[in-house]
Length: 325
Image (cartoon, rainbow, N blue to C red; front, side, top):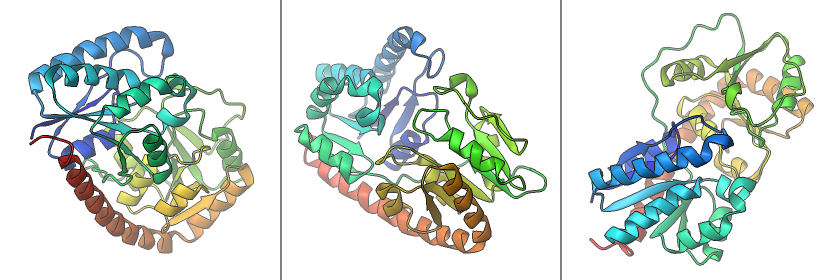
């Protein structure tokens, strides 16, 4: 069975990894500026045309499509309906909690009901999709594959890497206040400020470096050189891809104290409230306990790889019941 995974992002390791695990091809489709709403009407037209053209070229037997944006799923539904093939939605958390997409929840429900399956990252979101009258299952763990890259040379440390996208659900002001209380620690904050959806009210201290956009190789080198990795969502039920990246590289992790994250990252991790004082204490603890946390991350990585293999096998079994051979 030929599979094509459609994603309207410039990069998406989750889509790449899922496509590879399922023996399919990942198609990342993106035009114009990223995270700039002014361009959305124009780029969605371009991306729709390219999606249709690539599907006609690939002629898949099954389409997987990431959402949001829900318009990518709409184009896939049109193609799948015309050519009578099934599709699967990989629904990211934004479908359920981002106002840009929750206002289109009726369209998301319509498309999910017609999908062979909707993949989500945790049982809470699974229950929401099933309440729509659609089939859903959880695949939270997707192995991360990094390019070959030696650790970056960062100088004297310790060094922590903050995986960040300048989105509204990241407590970056609180993180910057925490950094100011830890002058001996060097902070490397990823993400492009050009695509920021927030404005900072806290001036960064001298121990904070904004990396701006990094190539895959440079991003990998930076993570390999980190003593601790930080990723902090302010919303519950948000699965952190950055946490999986830390786990893959067996790096101690600091992340928010939400139930889903506690359940997933139950080893090698310090969980924290999203306040400046709590974040600073969590970073100090992670650095102090780094050898133990790194060893726990090694164990967690092995366990979660087994978990992913089981979830993937179950997905394929369930999908087979709804897809004609």
